[in-house]
Structures are given as C-alpha cells and as structure tokens.
Amino acid sequence: MKILKYDHNGSDHPMTFINRNGQLMVNATELAKPFGKLVAGFLRTNHAKSFIKAYQHRSANLHNGFKPLEIIKGGNNKANQGTWMCEQLATKFAAWLAPEFELWVYDQIQELLSKGKVELKKNEPLSLANHIYLEIQKQNSKSINNKAYVERDKNVNARNGIIKYNVESCKIHTGLTPKQLKFAGKKFGYKSKDRCSAKQVVRKLAPEVACQMSLTDYIISSSDQYTTEDVQEVYNTITIKSEDLYKSLIASGINPKELNE
Image (cartoon, rainbow, N blue to C red; front, side, top):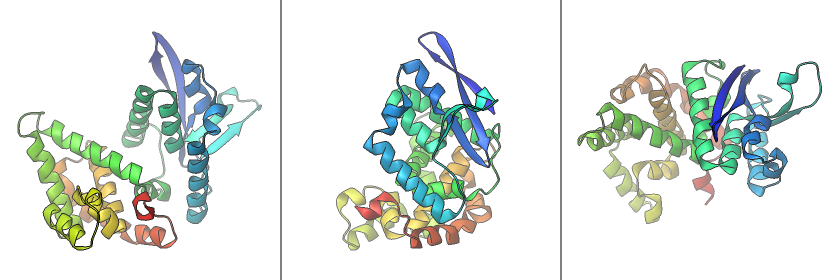
C-alpha cells in the first residue's frame, strides 16, 4: 500500500494506491473528497458504465479475474474500506473531478509502476493488453515525444530528436518510414484524418503492430534505463515477444476504437 498526498487549496489529502492480486487499485472515495463530489455521481454517467462494461469483457477474455471496480464496506481493516478503482478507471474519474487532478493521478500511477513502489507482477498480461486501446496508445506517443524533447535539452534541435525517434520506430516495427506508411494509407483509401501520422495508418493497417509500438513507447518513456536511442534494443529484447499476444487479442474481438469507426 502506498499513501500519497494531494495538495488542494492549501490542504493535503491522502490518496491510497494498493497492489491487490497483481492489479493496481486506487481508493476513489479518497480521490473525491477534496472536490466535494460523490463516486456514485460518476458511476451513473454513460461514460463510466461503458468503460466498466468493456473492462469486464476484456478481463473475461484474458481470464485474469481483474475488476474495474470494488466496493468494500465494513471489516476490521478500515484502510480497505471505500470504493476502489483500477488505474484506468481512476484516471477517468479524476478527469471528471478536475482536469489538473487527472494529470496528477496519472503521474502518480506512472511513477508507481515505473519505479516499482507498488509492485506488479512482471509481464502481467493486463499491463500488456492495455496497449490495444487507442487512448493508451496516444498517451504513450505523447510521453515518448516529451522524453525525446527533454533529452535534447528542449533546444532548437529537440524537434529533430522527436522526428528521429519516430522514423526509427516506424522502420523497426514496420519496415517502412513514416512517409511510406502515410502513402500506403492513401493507397488503401484511408481518409485524410486517418493518415495525418504514420501511427494512425499503422492502427488501421496492422493494429497488432500499433500495440507493439505503444508498448515500446511506454517502456522507453517510463524507464530511466532506456533513452530514445535504445528503440532497437527494446524492440529486440522485449516488444517483439508480444506480437502473438496482440494478434490473439484482436482475433478475440478486442480492437482499438479506430477499427470500429
């Protein structure tokens, strides 16, 4: 269990994160207190209902028994009481409470996962499966671009670092450059909005590869061990092993949102 403090209007509010059977859970009851809102209000929204339903479907397909939501009442241990949410649902809840709070919660989760202060099982299937979702893919893309920018000391060459990483990543994962991928998207008749970037084309053309690219982005952006120069090493030693998993998930009917549009 890890208790962190969130400063809201000059007061510190405890936020509890816990590893329960290999799943990171967040105490949503505590998240809501600084904002004077109720968890029940969020759970009544169509957005929350849809997410919970999708999460339960995915968990059933993976046979991991993970829950998006758990409500604990009574018991001898008061620390366990309250409404607990999985990390993804918790960030959505935080966004409903306040956008700046969403960023804080997301940062804490990434910190805990990347530095191991809340230990999750290595190679946990659920963690890998996260990368099949468009929202996660976009978050990881932003994170890796930010790391490439910071590595260049935010100077005039920073954009070149971002471009270099994305070119290398595309070539390593697909064998094509971003320019070639966007041209392929045009040849396949994709709408212009679906080929603004190479990654958008990959999500349509080869969704399992888009998942792998997201995983590579996440590993590098969330670790002090790797830099953006290590994309080939990360792909060769880690990412390449995930291809069969993503193919099986997509075959089972779990698809990135863009495929259903």
